[in-house]
Length: 100
Image: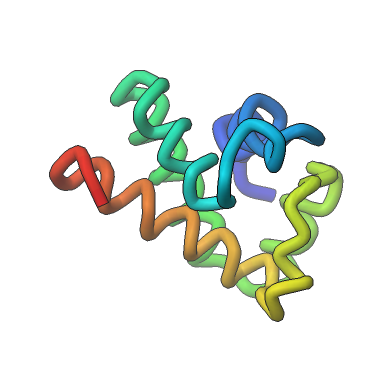
């Protein structure tokens, strides 16, 4: 399995059980991460996501299975891969110019 320490940090510190009480949308959660964390942590998240997304679906599932992500991406007809790709797109945009 790929290392996912920063992905785990994003989930535990930002997508925790009260994320929807603290943020208006899942996008706002990822933006809050990008706005609050160091550039090193943002780059680490980007690298972990890219590495994980380069794997097949079974590796993606196995890697994030135990994270207990309170955000229900499946309710929006998204797979784990779709959700991770979406997070990466926001992080990538925020790294590029500081906004999205």
